[in-house]
Structure formats: C-alpha cells, structure tokens
Length: 129
View 1 (cartoon, helix red, strand yellow):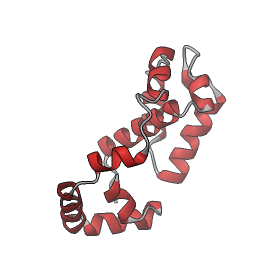
View 2 (tube, rainbow, N blue to C red):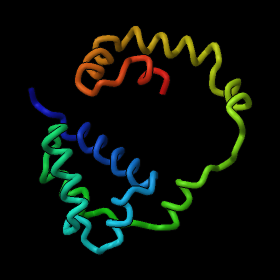
View 3 (cartoon, rainbow, N blue to C red):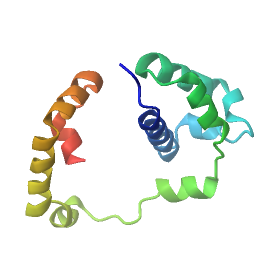
View 4 (cartoon, helix red, strand yellow):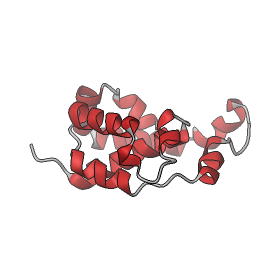
C-alpha cells in the first residue's frame, strides 16, 4: 500500500500542533535553534515512524523548520472564554449538524471503519468531532 505524503505531513503537523498546544515536554524542547538535535524530538520522530509508518526523513525536515513562539503557545493554551457546556450545547448541537453528521457517516462508512481498525477510534467519535 502506497503512503500519501501530504496526508502524513498534515497528520504530523496536527500532532505537532496538539503537542505544542497541550504544553507537553516537546514544546519546551523546541526552544533550541535546531529541534531535531533534541533527544525528545528524535524519540517522537522514531515513535511516529515505527508505530504509525511516517517517513523519518520527512518528519526530520518538518521539525527542522519548527520554531517555538511562546506568545502563540500561551494564546492557544488559554481558553477564550469559560461558558458551561449547557450554554455551548445549543450553539453546536443542532438538527442541521446532526443530519450533516449522519450524512457524513453514511457517505464515509468504509473509511471510518478502516480508521477504527487502524487507530482504534470509533466512528461516532470521529463523526462527533
């Protein structure tokens, strides 16, 4: 099966963003000028290559371009507002969103099932996101 480099790149960038947004140890490691020289970054690249089939050279190339900007990290880790769920629910859980979600699930059932088999994430979680 041939890998799709763009899809892997996008997934890698999403993972990197997620790690930075959660304030993980990887974010602190990226303070250095060349992130790929950090053992934590290499361990992450090794894990992504061995467990998930990412191309090691491609990940190294991506991480060589990474520069941590503390102002951005601070902004994305701080909640914009603090409403309770019952106030958010009517905004996000609407009849239209539910019907579009069901439509998406029906149209992509095979891909969702494959994603569950590969990554262990049930279709209803993916569709809910």
